[in-house]
Amino acid sequence: MEFQISTKTKKTIFGVIGVGLLAVIIGIVQHSSDVSFGTRIMSNLLIDGFFFFAIALGALFFLALQYATETGWSVAVKRVVEGIASYVLVGIGILVAVFLVLTFSDGGWFGAETVNNSAGHIVHTGHIYQWMDPAFTDMNSHSYDPIIANKAPFLTKPFFWVVSIVYFATYFLFYKGFRKRSLAEDLEGGTRIHFKNFSKGALFLVLFGYFSSTSSWHWIMSVDAHWFSTLYGWYVFGGMWCTAMTTIMLVVLFLKKKGHLQLVNDSHIHDIGKWIFATSFLWSYLFFSQFMLYWYADIPEEVIYYVERIAEYKYIFWGMFMINFIIPMLILMSADAKRNIGILMFVCFAIIIGHWADVYMLITPGTMHEHGSIGFMEVGLFLIFAGVFTYFVLNTLTKAPLMPKNHPYLDESKHHHI
Amino acid sequence: MADRVIYAMYDDDMVLLDGAKKLVSEGVHITDVFSPFPVHGIDPVIGVKHTRLGIVSFMFGLLGLALSIVGFKYMMIDNWPINIGGKPNFSLMENFPSFVPITFEFTVLFAAHGMALTYLFRNKTLPGMPADNPYPRTTDDRFVMEIRLSDNTKFSASELHAKIKETDIIEIEEKDYVVIK
Image (tube, rainbow over all chains, first blue to last red; front, top):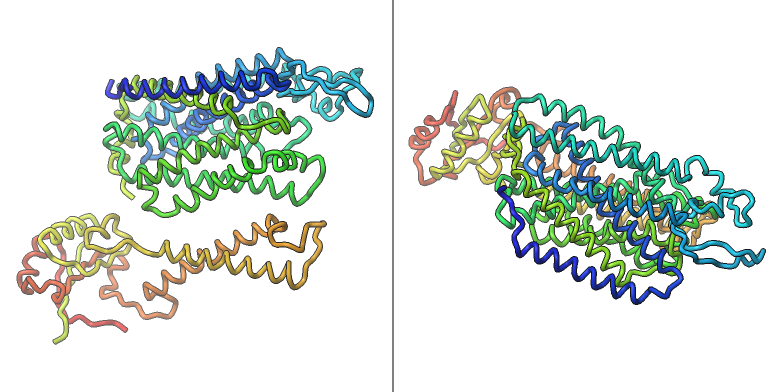
């Protein structure tokens, strides 16, 4: 309708995907003889699959939050949020495919073995989800792992799939419902749909409050099956929300540069900037809270998580914390910076890279241990996913007018001024 | 001769805002506006500069940050190192994570209190300071515009009166400008 993806934009997106493919091919050639080759590919698919799915999920959460709190100012950018949330459809597909491969390969075991020195037994290594391998949970196996086996009701394939399907179905249905009602409101008007969105939004927040935690335990925390953190779900959620706000900002700036979203003024951009600033602090606060408790207690089975990350990935680990905390804090603190397009673009791209590195830090040290590194394959897969993500989001944006009609707070949003 | 000042009274903030826009477009300089609550959007109209309170707050925050670091460096590292749970107590950097909460608290404490006190001091509204409000009713339901003749030398007093009366005022008064100490 009003917004169309220009051929130049299309060429750029396909160019990025092409460069990504090339890089991935170089990466495959580079690593194909490694023992950890399969692990590396599956880790990267899980990282990028989750990272971009999380952006969409964060946007879906933000949409529900705006409905449940009946927020006025954000109506002008509502379609952008919906557009980003639409990627949950693709994200679900990719994650399901990754989980299927992992399930049928016993948690991502591709034949790598190592000799357990003390007993001389051969042990499977290189898993993504070690707990999916029966060699560790079978009481008669010589590599029986009582810690993993004790988590059995939670960390088992059937339970994993039952809850994953519940999560995916919930996200899918709520996205479809929000989108359907949003489009119907354009035609219908009145407040019936508005109040329906209000209650559905509140319901989604309740479900998401549980699911965001429990899904992150199953999908990501179980990579380090021995370790656990009660703060983990919040931590993952903080990063998810921050990247979602950053992506919303980038898409809004892109559309404004193309001459769309005329009604989105400085104050809207300022408000999204405040969200980026605030959610960066939320994430940093949770990062540090989790880190300090383990550092302070210094209990071996708990602190192993950080020992692994700091010993092998020192620069990525501290670097991504600096990028995600210091850059938004110092640069976005002043009100003028939150209205300056150039500064915002720089901060947004920095945060996207920083939070990708955060998800990388969540998964890779637990799967690749000391063999992980950021090379052609990592960058290439990121570019492919980023291209697909951008194309899908922009494509959704072409399917409906960028400015909603008949939303009860539309007028308020048009006159938003801070 | 003492400065003369015109006080124009309104009973609605939006009417005052429209009146102010009209007067400013005609070249009248409005010195100040007194109102029971902040009138949204009045600052740029009457030419009030954006507040620098945020910068003050930031600097107080930095002061708190510096003081806390100096404080725990001296107390916990140099003067009386205490072994708490085997944490390294001989170097600031190695022990820094345990000091982050207090650093944060000090920064927030200084930023918030410094900002609030600066605000009260700058507005001359610290406890015990005399009120300098020309119209006590502007703390209730009236909105008053202050226009000084010395700021508007290109208009005569009667011209100003005529211009102000064109807006929807409910009262107008001219008197000597008294600086309240």
